[in-house]
Image (tube, rainbow, N blue to C red):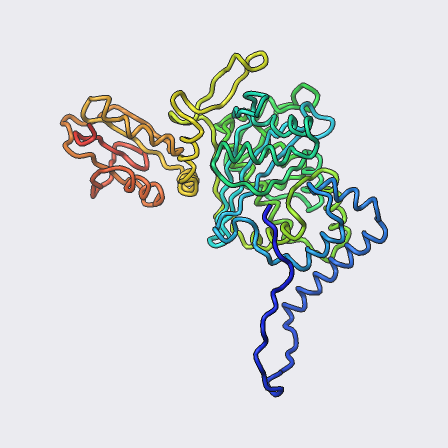
Amino acid sequence: MKSFDIITPHHETPHVHPQQFILKKPSPKKKKHWLRRLIIFLFFLALLIYGGNKLLSKANQVFDNNKNIFVRVGKFFTSSDKPLIGEDDGKVNILLLGVGGEGHDGPWLTDTMILASIDPNTGDVFLISIPRDFIVQIGKEGFRKINGVYPLSEKNDPGSGGTAIRQAIEKLTGFKVPYYALIDFEGFIKAVNHVGGVDVVIDRTFTDYQFPDYKNGYLPPVTFTKGFEHMNGERSLEFARSRHGNNSEGSDFARSERQKKILTAFKDKVYQLNLNDLKTLNNLLGDFTNHFRTNMEPFEIKRLADISKNINKEKVYSLSLEPQGDLICAGVIDDYVNRAYVIQPCEGKTYADIQQFLTNYQLIAKLKKENAVIEIQNSTNQSSATKTWSQLSNAGLDIKITSFKGRLTYDRTILYKNTSTKPQTLEYLKNNYNFVIADVIYTQSNADFVIILGKDSL
């Protein structure tokens, strides 16, 4: 991890006439800011006095290394304005992990993996969901599902799980991932309850008939109804974890969209908290102490909070590395224990292809949010004409190849804009394909864009 010098360099002070010194009263905003810090400092001091070794022990459960708690508190106040790794480049990458925890089947399998990439300059946040069934090679262990990297490493070398899963994600995505944060189900539920629950807008009604009950069985059918709902911790966990919902809610992308809603709703509630309420702070500290682990230092968490507080939920985008097009495929492998469903690069593809795909992750995530429907008609009757256009599905676009409704073969490929509300999709098409834009809409289709392939596609 990159280290920062907390000692301010000495600068030569220019000569100033005594009359130039004017004492100014601190502004109410600055006064409130330092009052808040003073309260937090006193809170930590009280914990240190009354908690002693117990607090230090708990702190070392949360953080990856064994730094003295006094050093951590000191850096919290002296280094909270230091930039995070990647902040200067506009890409602060944090791996968010969710595990079942003690008392659950496979308690340390990271069945929720979200790579959050934050651009402090634009306020954009990109949440890249990594399916738990993606296979990766783990040294001498061979190929394993990526959700098993953390527990396997912890078993072989306690305390190394965070580093191992970060490295696995780096190998898969090509991203530099300096930070991770892990929370278990119980901590998630308690944290949501202690902030008073979260407010979520459900996009469509769905039911999950196979939601696990943590006892190798299933809960009664879990249903979410379209519209606004105030959710407690248990309910929000069900909403975020559901994998088998009907009505198009069973995909990894749909799940990542729901997780995005919960994360942004929780962030909003945290920033509404009264930091002077020591009881709430104590409750949240207890939640995270017993159920949370990270390699971020307290001053880095504070810095992250500072750059995240003004993020608008409309600028949070989702992307999932689920099976799509000819890039990422699902299958069954025999050399895994008892055969297993896995996700992997399609035949002829490698991790390098996935990394190349993710170089445009910001645009692709924005395309996903627009959710445009593109209908392609082939006027040439030659299948080779659709080859390059069918690859649009690799960008997560909804592509429908239909029969040609006209009679005469087109010389040029024509694009019909049936909407003006999908600018990112149109820009992507213009930058990657050659066509002529029609002056009229295509009335015979409800698709957002209709593309008639001409002879120039051959």
